[in-house]
Structure formats: C-alpha cells, structure tokens
Amino acid sequence: MSLPPRATACPGAGEREALAAFLLVLETEERALVCGDVEAIDAVTREKSGWLARLAALAADPSPPSELIALRHRAREANERNGRLVAVRLARLRQRLEALGAAPAAGAAYGADGLSRAPFAAPGSRRSVV
Figure (tube, rainbow, N blue to C red):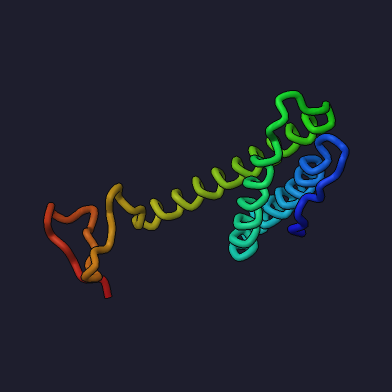
C-alpha cells in the first residue's frame, strides 16, 4: 500500500497519486476503527503519518488544479470522520472506566518505585500495586 509518489511532468501528479494512496490508508483506518482492531490501528497510524509528511511536502502549489482540491477535500472529510470514530470510542472507554470506578484522575501516575498515587488518598500517601 505504501507506494512512493512517482515524479511526472504533469502538474500535481505526485500529489494526486499520494492523495489517492492516502485515501486508501484512511479507508483502512476507518475499517480498523469500526472493527476495533488495535493492531491494525497501530500499523495504519504509522503509515498515515508517513503519507501526511509526503503530502505536506507536495502540497506547496498555491493554486492547485480543481481535481487536487476535490481530492484534498475528500481526504479531509475522511480524516475528520475517522477522528469522530476515535472520539466516540474514547468517550465509551471513559464511560466504562468511570463505571468500574477506575477512571484515572488527572495527574495520577506510577512512580519509578512502582507505587501509584491513589486519586482518593491523602496528599503524599502512596500505595503499593501488586
């Protein structure tokens, strides 16, 4: 799936090919998010980052052809749709954690000694996590 854009004499051709490949990555990301496939989400996130860097380098044309504008718009919409899917999953996860009483408090962390700071404990107190 990760094909580098080919250099051509046609203006915007490299960006057009990169956007087409990026749209495929976004579709893969959407399927992984819908299915909850954590490993696929992790892999596609790395691939997506690579394509975003390529696209940033290619999108320097201040007046791109209308076809590129349309592809950019489709990519933006797909990325925003995937962002909404992430937001919904995150909200559900937070609700589940709250229901279990395990929602992490702001700033709650484990120290280097392996002890956690309980969100309900007195300031400065720590408890061992086994």
